[in-house]
Length: 468
Image (cartoon, rainbow, N blue to C red):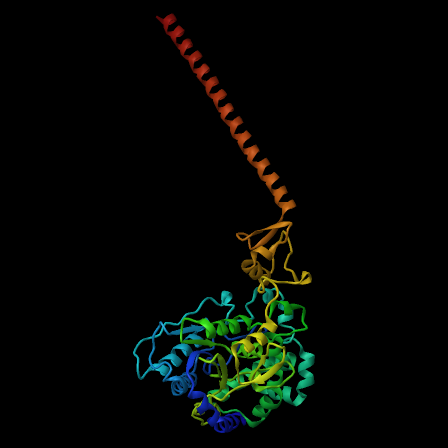
């Protein structure tokens, strides 16, 4: 692959510009990086699963090298760690959390022994960085979510029969039956092998570069990009909230540095929101490599510059970055509406472009079109529907039903609930009446037995007198 050479050449050509940028006063830094190299994913029940993929030794080395790169570029801006100046956020997976520690420790290991605290929240409620496979309105539309993964017709148009046979020979016969799922698995697995410097045949590398990467770009665009003509464009770009947080921090954040350790989807989703990658291009940043980093550097003059770097990952490479962080172009917009491409813009121009993908509905994570609503009533819903109702209780059942979170998130219709209430009332009344009748009957029986006992006592007394 030719990417490392291109990155190094770009960095060398831009060193004079970067040297000029370094003479200005930095106000604030935000950067998001993908975790380091990890294990290959698994295929379980027809789905790709990354839960068991852990950071590898090469992944650890990448993160250490990223910390050194950041120290070279920003060491004078923040020479030592302080929790009052440095905020560290991570996605809730071991490889992201470990990567966050690795970068921060390498960044400050010469000047600080403080072990940084990594902030992270549960995956199913982290909608800032873990987007968007956990958004409730995405989970509710699982058919849409998996439509690309299940599009075997498209896969067969992008892969030749020889390609599919080669993948089947490497990964299993199931590749011939579900070529799209196989392609998405293979592109990830081969990337892992390359990054972990395992041997990979030239044939697989060629298929990876020429066929599998374009397939992966399509999947990432489907899942994580902003589609302005889509009916769900009203919910905004998946990466909008993260972009907005970074821009707010650039203007008035209370920390000097914000670090985000995340997945590739977070990096590319943010890049798409900023206009760094577009739906109609085949930019390699649609599938960021392990260790990819995107920086937003704010200066005291009100400008923001953008940088992007990836470590070398070829066999026998040092897994290191170039000497600096090369600039990357994003899209900005003037007050007159002109959109332009640049690696540095006034923060207001960045805001204007980003706000083109701003949500226009009040609850972007719960919004569903009527035809997609998860509103089946009076029965246990699917697991995806339960997930939606758990996180979106106000939108779950509509005006004619009530949500019962204690009964598998059933939407109980008012009519049925009223009927159930009538049954419950009848049962209660029956129980009360039955209890009252039982008590009365018990009293009567006791009274009757008492009378019998009195009568028997009198009989005995008369009998004793007669005998006397």
